[in-house]
Each structure stands twice: as C-alpha cells, then as structure tokens.
Length: 381
Image (cartoon, rainbow, N blue to C red; front, side, top):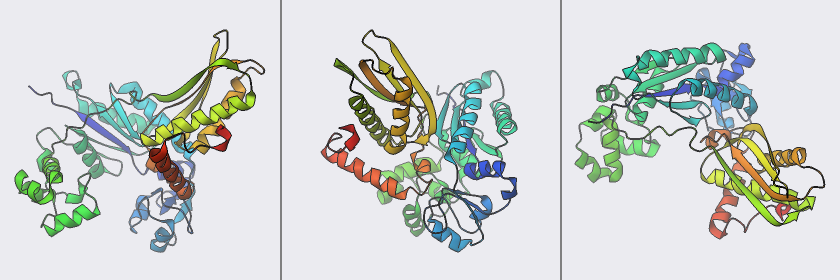
C-alpha cells in the first residue's frame, strides 16, 4: 500500500518588495521595482501593482520603466532579505519535521504521517499565521499530495492566502488552468501546445500518453503525467547540504603570512566555483586554523547570500586575521561555506551585477574546459 504524501509549499509573497514596504510603509500599494535603475540593470522583483503594467522579474529595467514610467525604483538591500529569510527559516525549522529551503523565499514541508495525530491543514494554517505575526511578512501556501500540486496551489492562492487540494482532487484542480501554469512549460513549449489546440490543462488530459509521446517525445510523457497531477519529486532536507569546504595540511608548518593569505584566496576561489556548479549560494563563511600542537580554532560569520569569489574572499581574509595567532606556524588551514540554498538566480538579480554574472560564467566555462587550476586569481599564486 502506497503512502499518501502531504506536502506544503510556502512562498513569501513578493518577498523583496514586502521587506521594503516594512522598512518604508509609504511604498504600500504603489508600483515598486527592486533592483537596477532606469538606465541599466534588471528587475529583481516588483510589486503586484507594478505587475499590472506587464513588469516581471528578470526584465531589463529600461523596459520596465517604459511600461510604467512612474514606478518607484529601489536598489534593494540583500542583507535585509537574508535576515528576513533566516528568520522565516528558523520559524519553520522549529516546527516542521522535514523541510526544504528552495530559495530565500520559498519552502517545501513534508507533513506525511502527521495526519495520524492532528489536522495537517490546520497545522499549516497556524504555522503561516505564526510567520505573519512574528515577521509581518505576507505568505501564501498550498497543501497537496505532491510538490508540484502544492506549488501550483500556492500560485493560485496568492496574494497572502492558502489553498488545500485534497488527495484525489488533483486532476479536477488542474483542468481549468492555462497549460503554461505547469512548471516547465515555457514560452516556446506554450506556442507548440497552442498550435496543437492545447490551451488548458484539461486539453492535455484529453490526449493519450502515446499521442503526446509521438508528438513531443519524452517531454510528452512528462507533460501527460503532470496534467494528471502525477509528480514524484521528494522534499529534500534543508540540512542535507550543510556546507562545502576545503582544507590543506602542510608537511612543513607554514609561517609566511603572504603564503597563508594566498591559500585563503585559493581555497575560497575553489569552493565558490564548486558552489556555482551546484547552483547554490552560501550565507556563512568560516575559516579553520590548526597549529603544530594540534590546537584547532575556527571562526565564522554570516554574509548576504552569494556564490561570488570577490564577495567571499574578503570575508575569509578578515576571519583569518581575526583568528590567526601572529607569528605562529600553521599546520592546517581550511575555508568552509555553509547555510547553502539553491537561490543563485535570485541573488544575481541584485546590485547591477550582469557583468559579474557574465564574468563568472566565462571563468567557469574556462575552468570546465581546461581544468579548475588553469585559471585563478593572481593573489592565489
């Protein structure tokens, strides 16, 4: 007998804008754009009022201001968003038996089995209210039998609401929705489906699996399964990917401060690269030092979520200087990144960093092609 899963999906509504409104209540109800400015940059987030003009995240700022010239532009403070994200994460971690942090503002909770003891819907309602009461942030959730339906239910519940799709009602819930509401159906696929006469999810449900496979290949089978509410994705524990680190033990104890600093740079660069390959960002940096008598000390600090070398290296250097006993030889040196989450795309939308994103993509492409050690910072030599 298969287990009936109970999955909740939480999404902080227009998270970045909501944080800005808490800081400046006069912004409430106005078309607000976070990230970039009118001349360059891209939209990191926008208020629901701005969306009415056709503005959306990842849109060039110049185009956004063409659509809505009177929009209010805010550069945004990622440190504030990190702080609120951690706050919500802690509230969820204190209550949920298993949760996955999908991004700074999105969470999946696995409540399977909890129905034996109490009502999962009421439990989720209470948790949502606790988050609202403590942080003052609006938050929506969907409750369903799998991750896909829960996420789609959340989208339908916005803004600041909730929706429960009981087990067995997935197909009925999906049927009237536009086909591009299905995760993975982008603009190109949407056009292909419209050419086939498919506009709503119920239109897909009328096809057989074989027909869709013949027309769309393997994607057709996946689309057919999704149209029926079939999804097997699991909630992956937020604690699974706790950290990423590297360290070196020196046969001849290291005393040259220039060498040690170059090692900090080299290690930070290496694990930042690995972080980007995993499509994650880190919210905490730590440095570890072991001396010849095996005394081991470490120090860490929280940072705004990032995967960029140039943001991680200065922090690691500062930690080293605070931790290092001047003049003492070093037996082992290590750098660790923790508080990992898969939010690299959202992070990169801030602070006009298109050039930085392109730069790191180019650097990583070279490393993939020729090896990680072929391209490195001069300060790591």
